[in-house]
Amino acid sequence: MAVHTPASAEDGDAVSRLLASTGPILSLDIGSGTQDVLLALPGQRPENWPRFVLPSPALAVADRIRRHTAAGRPVWLYGQNMGGGFAAAVYEQAAAGLAPAASPEAALALHDDPERVRAQGVDILSACPAGYAAVPLADYEPGFWDALLGAAGLPKPSLVVAAAQDHGHHPEEGNRVGRFKLWQSLLSETQGDPARWVYATPPAPCTRLLALQRGTGGPVADTAAAAVLGALATPEVARRSQRQGVTVVNVGNSHVAAFLVFRGRILGVYEHHTGLLDTDALLFDLKEFGFGWLPDEQVRAKGGHGCAFLAPLPPEAEGFAPTFVVGPRREMLQGHGQFIAPHGDMMIAGCHGLLYGLALGRVQ
Figure (cartoon, rainbow, N blue to C red):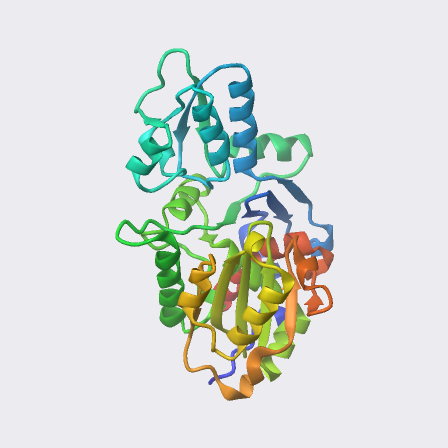
């Protein structure tokens, strides 16, 4: 396997050159619980860039819906496809007898199948009915960011790059199966090259990322890709992966994602639901995963998304034993790997990963 040395992890200059050519970049990592935000500014050290950890857009929508439910007002959702973390609040309103509704586009945030949405008590209507409170949906709202950055006296970005998890639209199969077909395609088409994991144009099934890109006008990526790119932006991880295979694990609020990395290439992807795993179960899966022994079907049978490999895994990777851990639930692996924090802030790892992925693409 050819050696591929990540440029910016080695000399620290690629992101600086990127910023010099673009101006300020707003980097957003949109998760289920938080959206992690970094405003990268030319001519400043990364440690001095403004950063925020805010409630996710889905949580903000859920709060708005619950306030309307408490006031006895039904809601009509409109706008774009986005993260569906507000769904419980919608179904609570339906259970309360308030008959929530959604536009056809907004309904995609609840489920790709409109009949499944209707079965949960949500009408699909193109216009807001009389007496309903209209609630907009979007993972990215330009007016919000203009107001926040302006109030803080910060410059408007020249470019917005954003990450969100997208199961994809797979009408002929389940979302978990479809998502891992997307991962397998990404691994094989890019040969695990992380420089191509930030999309100028996301794949057609990635309806959430497509909606996000329409909002930002900039590149987008999956949150799992942003996490592993953030780890690779850490010089220690990049250097270690040149000598032997390493495992990068992002233990998020809702999902665990793990990656096998060797000589700058990503050779395997694993995803599960954080709430369905304890430490012993995760350690078992990671060991089997590192040797390429973990069947995709076994992960899904236990409620996870699956796993995918760029086969065959090279024997010189030695089972990808060194483990580097990021994510807000990283304490799950306390004592079983090295916690890393790109530029000193673990919560902003995905934001740094997006910048690193953009810079890698420019280097190539």
